[in-house]
Length: 583
Image (tube, rainbow, N blue to C red; front, top):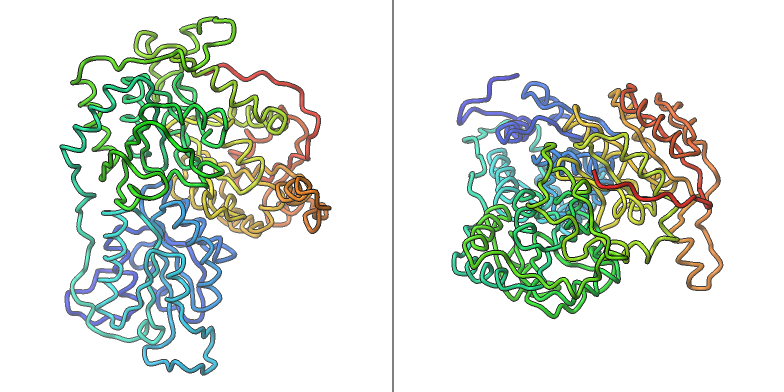
C-alpha cells in the first residue's frame, strides 16, 4: 500500500480518485478497465483496493449494489466512457429504486471538449445528463483538487440522508493531469436529523390507544430489526413487510405476515386497522402490486426522507429520522404509558376450529434463545388464520415452487444471503414463502424490476461476506440477461449455487398475454442446457427433478469452488406438501 501524498503534493487525477475512495474506507470495487480509465486502475493495488472484474458493466453495478446491501458500506463501480457508462445505467436505476448507496466513477470527455461532435472514442452528448435520469446526482469535476470534494459529497449523501446512487465524472485528460490534490476530504460523521420529541410523544400516545394496530416494514427498517420486533410484541401488532423489508422481523414469528402487502386479504385487513405504523417504506405500487389501499385509521410514517411523508399515502403523524432511534423512542413511550395496548381480536378470524397453538410452535429468537410463551402469545389476534386466508388466494399458482423452496430453507444457514431475479419463482415463490429472519438477507430488484440481477448480485454479496452462504434464485429468461457472470464466479472460485426454475422463456409475460386473450408471442425461448453452459464457463451444473435432489445438490454446491447451476425443469403437477412448523 502506498503512502498517501502530503497535502498540496501533486498527483494525477486518477490517483486522486483512488485516494479519495481509500480515505472513505473503500476496500473493494467492481468494474471493467477501458482505454480512458487506466490511470484509475493503475493506483488501485497501491491503495489497497481489491478489484472484481465482471463480464459486463451492468453486472458490475448489480454486484456493487448487493455488496452495499449486505455489508452496510457503499458499493463502488468503475466504468469507462460512453457505452460502458450506459451499460451500468440499469443497475444505477435499480439502486435508486431500492435506496442503495452506490458510487459510480467514470471518465468523461476532456475538459475543453467542444459541444459539437468530433468523433472522439466513446463520445456522447452528455454523460452527466444521461446519469441524472437514474442517479441522485451526477457531478462532473473540473480540477484534480475537486475530485476529493466530489467523492466526499457522495459519501455525505450516503451517511446523512436517504441513500441513493451517485455518479462522479472525471474528464479523461484530467485523469492524467498532475496537479496539487489538496487536503483529504472526508464526509462528516453526522447522521440523520434528530427526531422531534413532540412528534414522538404524539405517535406513542396514538400507539398506546390503538385497539387494532399494525406494522408495515420496508427496507428502511432493517437497522432497527430488534426494535421492530420488540414494538410489535409490546403492541400485539401483526407485522407485514415489503420485499425490501423481508426478514426484518423473523418471518416465523407468531406476529409475522411476511411479504404479503400484495394479498387482497391482507390489504382488506390493513384498511381496517385503527393505527398503521409504516417504517422505511414508500407504500408504493411496487410494494403493494397495485394502488395503495385507502387506510381508514391513523397512519404514522417513520422515514429518513422527509419527502416520504407526503408521497403515496400521506402521514397523519410524520416522524423524520433514523428508524432505530425513532423506534427505540416509541418503544420507550409505549412502555411508559398506561400498560399493555388493548387488542380487539374479534375482527380477525380465529384459528380454524378454535384449536389453540402449542407453545412449541413459538419460534426461537435470533441467536437461538427460545421465546417464552408468556412473552409472545402463540397465535396473537388470529394471525395464523390471516396467513391461511392469504395463502388460499394463491395456492394454485404458487404450489409448484413450495416443495423446492422448503428444501432450500432446510439446507441454508440462518445468516444465508439469497439473491433474487424478476422471476415468478422469486416474487410469487421465495418472497412470500421462503421464511427468513434478521440474520439472513433476501436481495430483490424491487421497483425498477430489472432482469439479470440475481447472479451478479450473488457475486457482490459473496465478495462482501465470503464467510456466509450465498445462493442465487432465478428463472431461465432472467438468468440469460447476465449468464456470462458465471465466468466471473468461476474465476474467483466462489462457492455459489444458482438455482434456476426453467419455464421455457418469459413465463410471467406469457401468462399476461394469455389473460388478455392474446396469442402468446416472443415469450417462448429455445431450451438451453444451462448446466452444460455452467461447465463451459468453468463451473458445475446439474438438473434436479425433485426437492430431495435439490437439497442434496445444493448442500454440495455450497462448498464447491466455483458456481453450480441447478436447473429445475418446469413442474406442473406438484403434490400438496404441508407447510413446515415454525422452528
